[in-house]
Length: 476
Ligand code: HEM
Ligand code: HEM
Image 1 (spheres, helix red, strand yellow):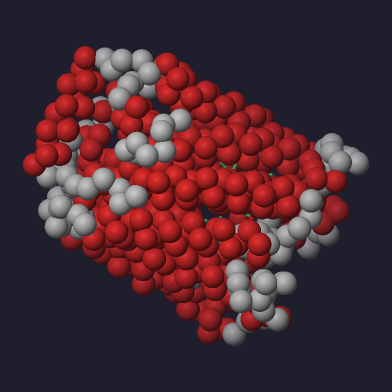
Image 2 (cartoon, protein in one colour; image 1 turned 90 degrees about the horizontal axis):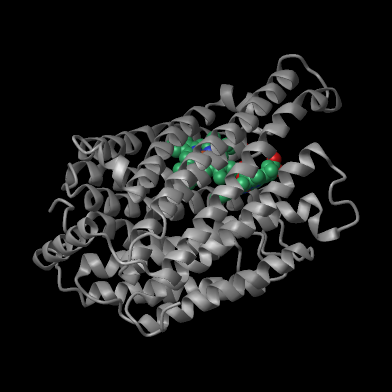
């Protein structure tokens, strides 16, 4: 790890520690997948009981892995786009430390059954406090850097980051009902409405906006091409801010909440097609003439996979929010299938790509093994497709059997076993692929292999352009 005052050390510490959590979190997922096929697998071990391990898996991958890595990428991107070092490297490192220690405690507590059991708001109040502190300090660090910026223009990635770091602490406070420490909950159905207002906005106004910033940064850089259109990125930005905030109730289409709230959620979910189309075309047109770069750039390969997955998951989501479709898919494995297409294939791909881009640059070296990175990508895609088919077919079979054939749960379950087994197979490939990624990252930092000559030339060229405009290739 870098000295904690050195430039970019906070970014590196956030990202590298997150990579460790990725391996731990996905191993938990694999045990869950095994428990679906062999329910007695962890018999007698309380902290491996499904109810605890599922919450621990979700919190490990969402907060310790994805959120930690994402904050690390912002600490790298913001100085590049403002022309200033991060306001306080020490503060950034304190945030990285507090984040990891807080979440370690939170995950251990969940495994020991200390949970508030509201989805994505499971962490108990004592852990919500350090989480909030990090979110606020991180916001201050980024805002102070922006305030002292040399580059006056605020580019696309910056709007997203600035919006995200302000929205999320408010959401976290409201969604976790932090003014009621013992329960972290309201009463009755109001609590469900609150929980899902927060729940979908964790996805929409934290991961989505936070990660689109990363895609908007990496694609122009790795292709040395200006972003196709500033106007399209404006439509995408305001479209997400407008439509995403009201979609929470699409998680509650069969709950006794006001009908009008459900209708607003369905309409806004469908409206999401507008910003998604704008984002899709903006990156597609930026990539025009650059597709061959996918062969030579590992970061771009992962980030473009993340972009494609974002488009797919959003169209799937708009469709899944329609009452007729949701009746079939809700309460089935189809929903976690969508969740993994989103948070693994979109979010994790984008962050893995960003780390392959940023870590070697921070340490001034090349990726330890590009061949291993490409092999990791192949395992990842095969593993994900197998895994996703398992979830989706199992979900559609469950829904059809229940809704159209009226079969009871006990009659449906035995037929699902082969699809559940597919998840173990795909999941094993995925965990192997993430372990290869973690190893490659650590080896990159430890071995610090010198840059190949063409890479060094490219890096110097981008540094030169950076002097003219820190934004490099984002269109002004
Ligand atoms: C246009 C965009 C999207 C729409 C309209 C949408 C819609 C939906 C719907 C209707 C559900 C199922 C609710 C249910 O039946 O229980 C759902 C679940 C979910 N979505 Fe999306 N989605 C979109 C994009 C995304 C993105 C970009 C992410 C991640 C960043 C995401 C992550 C999830 C997750 C994790 C769940 C599972 C929630 C749970 O725990 O039940 N979605 N989404
Ligand atoms: C970056 C990697 C991953 C992320 C971000 C992730 C995220 C999630 C999320 C958000 C959920 C809750 C879904 C919902 O409520 O609808 C979930 C549940 C689950 N995940 Fe993962 N996951 C990852 C990797 C894995 C892996 C590698 C496996 C298996 C080998 C796995 C297996 C499971 C299982 C079995 C569940 C429970 C599904 C259920 O309750 O029906 N996950 N994961």
